[in-house]
Structures are given as structure tokens and as C-alpha cells.
Length: 193
View (cartoon, one colour):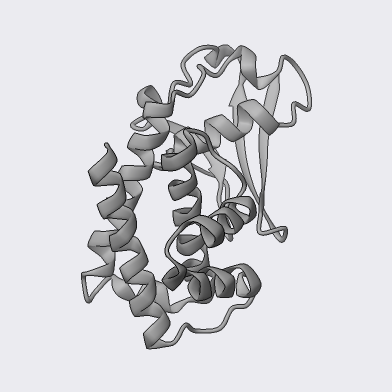
């Protein structure tokens, strides 16, 4: 039996993971990080690789919105994702991004519009999770963040929402504001969890 997770990636890309039915009940996010699975990521070929640290978000999305092409539904073979697993994944990602943002050899990834936009909108999703104990789409999370977070982030979030499909470079001021938004998310998650 085959199960596919098809996740819209800004409505222009698709991320595909392939699973066999005989892996029933091993898809707890905390158990799968070190194992390798067939997958196709953005602009990549089919490969066998470890799952990313954001895997709990993928599991949650697959459970709630996954499309089963053949066989039993995702709920039958994926262990339900806990709020603690989501928060732990969010914390790990924020810490990684903070480290990369403060490393001169790594920070250049924020100059790419699609990467910078992904970071800003994902951070909105993490803030939504921290406040509401569940996840929402990136666009719903961005709208929530515009209404609920400090107004100094509104311009950054609005730009990310409107320019997420553009592939141009990000200016230095916007990179600095993005780094400050990462730091704010890190402070927030560290103070709550």
C-alpha cells in the first residue's frame, strides 16, 4: 500500500514523501529523526534521507489534511503528534535559525527572498502555536501575528505575505529585521517553555 503526503509549497511546489504500509505505528516524530526514508524535496531528486527537525509539523499536517491515494488513512499509521513535540520542534528550528543568522558564513541564506519569506511566515506559525496551542496555516498565522504581535513586525510580515513568490534578494535592513524577529521568537519560546 502506498501513502503520499502532498504539501502545497507556496502553491507552486510540492513536497512528496513515500511510505509503505508496513511501517504502521512507527511514525512518532521523536522516533523517526535518525532513520532514513525515500523523499523528494524542493528542486531535488528522489533520495533516501533523514527526516528534518520539522517532521512533527509534517506529521500533524499529514494526519489532518493528508491525501491517501490507496490504503488506510494516515491516522492509522502515524502516532498523534503532541503539543510538546510541536513546541520542541519549533524551539529546535528557531535555535538553528538564530545560530545561522549570527554566523557570517551562514547568514547569506536570508538574502534569498523565498528563504527569508519562509522564515518569517514559519515564525508567525510558531508564535501562533505558542499562544494558541495548535498550528494554523502560514497565511492565517501571519494575519494573527499582524493583529497580535508588536506593531514593529507588521511591515516585515506584510512584505513576506505579499512577496513570498518573488525570487529577488532581500535588502540589508530587512535581513536585520528578520534576524531580530528570529531573536524575538527565541526569547518568546525560551520564556514560555
